Length: 103
Image (cartoon, rainbow, N blue to C red):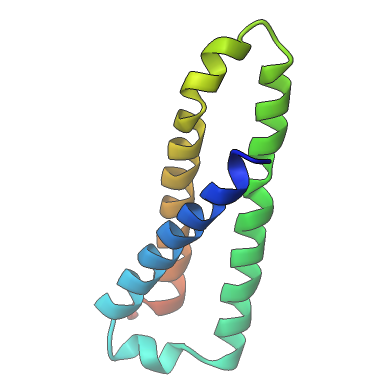
């Protein structure tokens, strides 16, 4: 947890930047789309993203218990990078669903 918890801030900043960018790119429609209900949906999605972030703990612990421990300690930042990229893609997908204008 000492490795992952400080990096959770980075993960959340990445998701917030992606969501904020989609929001700003879709102005003025996004202002109309942001209601109390959509704010609740975004909150639930943020909580679920943070629950998914916790799966890194399981991967980390299991890998540290294996013969790959030494290599893993040097390379586990790759799991963080992959998780941030995957989270950004999902955040982009959901943010477009909430804020993008209908064509």
